Image 1 (cartoon, rainbow, N blue to C red):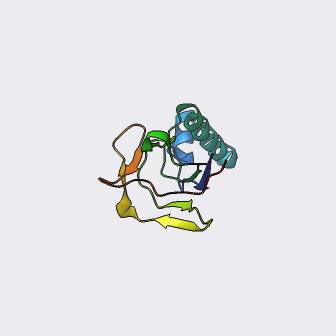
Image 2: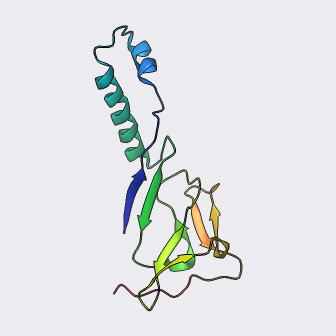
Image 3: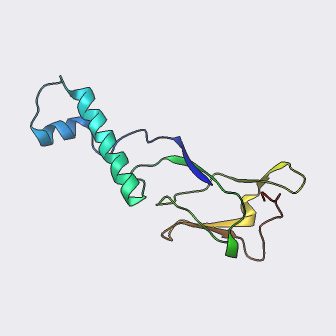
Length: 127
């Protein structure tokens, strides 16, 4: 099981100019350092709160379908699910049709469940 960032935020929640204004710095000698500190502060906050402050894309790999049928997404807030892929019993990688599952972005943590009257498909055993 693993969670890997595939697309980092394109902006920070605080700009370098905003950070400089807060610190009353009016020269540009340390702009790179200040920008790096803003990024480090965001990453630290995200790590400790298990929340994303800015939109980003993650890949989440699991060994099996969840017991009870519900995926509780470990990084909040969940905005969307791009795709769900799995390895079928024959060993082929399949992409699950989005019509076969529901994504609850309002739940905290976000949830992914089989659509009404659907079950997760059979997958190759990892044990």
